Image (tube, rainbow, N blue to C red; front, side):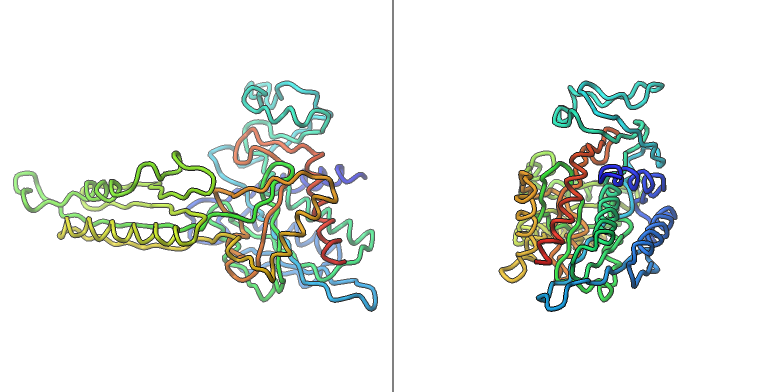
Length: 414
């Protein structure tokens, strides 16, 4: 089979496993389907000859492809790849029904004749770049799940190619993790003693050529406000309305430093959820900034805002909890370890891929892993329109992503 045929077969095999993660779940993994994915992948990795295969209590699958360097070869750094097994839940069907558009020749793509669902060129002009390529789409009732099963298929085909062609390489470690889509929860449960690498890669962004080694520093703030209830007949100087206290806190923030008013590397404070009743209120806030100092300043600003509102409402009970979620990959890079990023650009040059260096307004599993001293940049899957029913995989681009993985192994082994 050709590489595209292998990638298609692998992707369809993994897309058939329902593995949406679930927001707000207290356990990792958040859904049973992710266990099914891990068990299937463990079997497939064992067939390829990987060793030290283990699925942890948190459904993190790790394994190692032993080095096969020729005698006298110079030492090669241990390298790892990470892919997440979950797909996003955006209130569409958890079941994915992929379909293949052979030799796409332009125009709107019909996803579902019964429901009249299309990917329209007028809304998605990026389709025009892939005329002549085979496309894989969903049937319009779900996301496709290329985020991140395109990466899972990529890694499996790359490993299969390395093994079958007996390509020389150093120690290669893999980690397949759950619950990336709900806060990088799987990466945070990794046992790094089973992933002893100098650097690693994720394959978890979109269009051909995308490179990500700059991500947000990310945190979350949870504010709980306890008011004082009273009947209106005796409320004066007694009642403390927690909803209004919450509004006072929100009004401390700059409305122009929110997601809808920022771009590029600009950060924000995002009040994402408010819940309140007569007795108490809660605020859930996301804090984001590429610049570490600005990120810390935003956290401090929230603390000052809470102190200010508390002083204005001394009878209210206000509790603030701020948690760091992940870091900027770039902050983990230095002169000694930056080679992991340089390898990506070298690989693209050799494969004649135009790089698209992106400062991601978000994070990857590598954003957390990098905080553990393992710089983990990210490169493209080749798929587009993640987190929507208009997601599609142009197989020419997906193949280029797999060739990137193989080229990286080659460059690291030199």
